[in-house]
Each structure stands twice: as C-alpha cells, then as structure tokens.
Image (tube, rainbow, N blue to C red; front, side, top):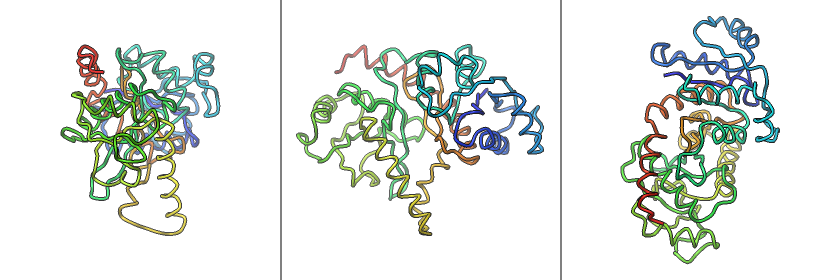
Length: 321
C-alpha cells in the first residue's frame, strides 16, 4: 500500500507533518506501507535530516506550491497545479498512490476529490464524519460535519446510508442504528428539512433507521450513526472540542472526556468519492498526523469506497426514495 501525505498542509506544517510521518514509521513497516511525502523536496529533506531520520525511508514527490488555509478552494486548486494537494490528487488519479491524506485546506481537498477521482455515481453529495465517544463505551458516527452546510432531505437520507456503511466496515458495528438529529423525538418535530428527511428515512430498507434523537442524547448508547446537515454537525463538533479544551485549561481530568482528544482520531474520510481520501484537523500536531496516517491505512484496507459503490448501485437501482 502506498499512502500519499500532504507535507505542506495544516497550521503547523511542514514540521508537524514530517514528525508525524516519522512517528508512523514506528508502527507500520516500509514493506507493509510506503509513505509518500508530497511537498517542497528540499524542505522535506532538510527537516528529516534535522530529525536525524534517513530520507530514504520515504518516497518524496516535489510539489513547490502551497494551498493555504484561507484560500478560496476552487480557485486555488485550479490555479496551483504544482501545489501539494493538487499533486497528491494527480498521483491518486494515476494510481501511483492508493490513498491521500492532508491536514490542509478542507475545501481544496473536497474540490480536488471531485475534480480528479470524482464522486461515486449515484452519490448526491460526499460527506465527512466525526466520532462521538459514548458514555457506555464504544463510539458513534456523526455525519455530516461541515462538507454540506445546506442539505436537502434526499441528501440526509443518503448520509444515513453512507454513515451506516462506514460504521459497519470500520468500527465493526453490526446493523448500525441510524438516527436523525432533531429538537424532539416525535416524527412531527423539527424544521422542514428534518420533517421531510424523517418521512424518507422511516420506511428505509437501506439502513436501520430508529427515528429522531435529541442533542442531549448524542453521547448515550441510543444510536450508532447520527445524521444532520453539515452546518449543524460542524457546530456540534466544535462545541465538543471547545468543552474538551476548556476542561484541559481548567486542569480537569476525566477518563471519559479524554476520549474527546482529536489527536487520537487523526481525521475523517471523504465518504462518497472514488478513492481513499482523508482530511485531518487543521491544527494537527505530530501525534494527530501519525493517527491520520494510521486511519488512512485502515480506511483503504477496509476499501470503504468500494463497499459504498456496491451498495449505492443497489440503492439507486432499487429507487427506494
């Protein structure tokens, strides 16, 4: 397996990315997984030498340009063909790498995926996820967390399918319980979007829909996949991160809340595209980068994209909605 890593992406690049890649080599062997560092070659080699690490352990692909966090994604991707993100997707499209990971500009990663390897036929909107640690142990999956701030009912329906496939194949959750995030559990509650989505989802044969879930129950063992539009999901995600940081700042330690540390999860795949593409947190340090690389390996090993494609074909042919 060959994993491409955007060395220039992220708030603390390139140091955090290079140090994270070095840490990853302590867990995965070169025979098992070749790491391909994509970015300014001279900077990469210089940083590796500074860390007393042999550059030959990695394959290095020169990409002199950078798509920075604040740049407009579509414009930057199209106008910077030699950027690390653009180069990574070019390698992925040509199958010179099997998977591509970056903690850089999320919008550019999404644009790159759609421009280069394309969405899986039948997918309305690709989505991203976040892990929700459960009080009783285990995890839930929140989908979408920012890729699609504005979603329609059929998109939310499809998120239920994507999240179910992801939970089943990566977290080994059999017949995942899918719930719709809402302001009440009753079918008639919510805005026009959630009411319409509920009507589509309640008779679904594509996944195990259990109804609405309120935000106060997000971390209880009531559902395995929680569906919402990207605007709502992003607010939930960042509020959880804020609570974790606040507890750290106040010196409060708790075994459960320790599981909210983003470093441990590495990132999220872009579900619904023809390949393994993983997006890390922009503030990723070396530990988060290491886990982003390990997650990328597991995502591609599980061939989530292939399984999504197979089930989406059945879903579209059945025309269930």
